[in-house]
Image (tube, rainbow, N blue to C red; front, side):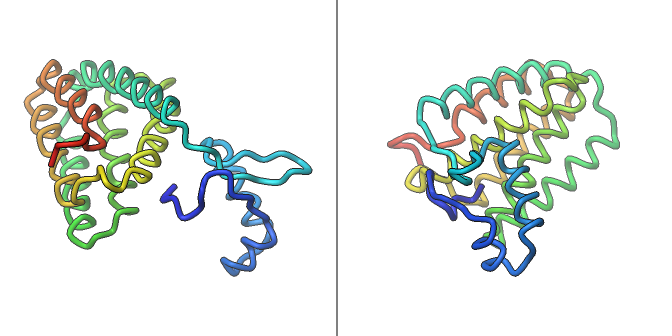
Length: 192
């Protein structure tokens, strides 16, 4: 996920178990999970390989993520309550702390939690797994564009506007803000 391994790198259960000081069974389970997430491919005699990052595929993933989240945003505002807002506020606080500490992995996990917390309010349960995978891969793609990444503190702060619009129960505003948020995940040339 955080791109410690290059695309199309071969992985061996035994080598990874030695490297991480755990059993092969633990590594096997982790690799099955990564396969479910589309981060590795497992092929009997050929072993396990880190999946490629195709720019065209990344664009399609972002477009799908955008479509699902926008639909969810319009519905989420109808179901938000004080408990949901408290959860999101706590996630935002944790995002700010992770960003200040320079913990990019924690910030990614919290970003996913923030977006999924909003999406779960939509009641579109069958789409959650698809959105989770799209979000995971959009983060992975972003990590491969180091020249186009914003500071972590700015990344965390971008979620405050989403929170405010959800709190105001402004579905149209939230939908537009999420569209802008997703469209600008990776900085384009000339942006800063």
